[in-house]
Image 1 (tube, rainbow, N blue to C red):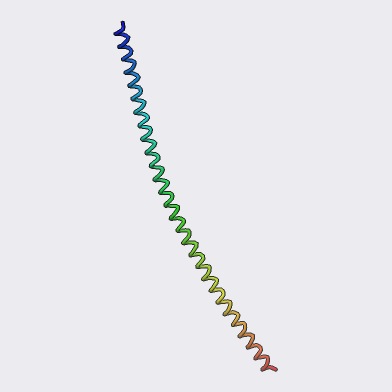
Image 2 (cartoon, one colour):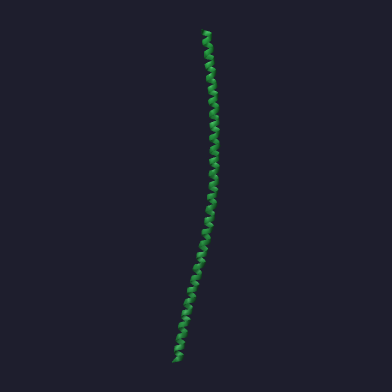
Length: 103
């Protein structure tokens, strides 16, 4: 009877051991999967950071280009304004000269 109980106990221990090994293997598999997902996320995060950095540089260059264009436009506008002022002054001078001639 004691031998039979020992056999049952041994069988129960072996079953529990097998269950624990299976559980341990599943846990290791889960850990590996989590590590893999973490690595994927880190790569994606790095990739997104690089893309964001590139877009930021692109926007900065575009902004600088826009500022340069605005400055060029303002300079051109000021130049034309001076030219028109000069033409108006020339016309005004000619009108005064003609008035003097007519009087």
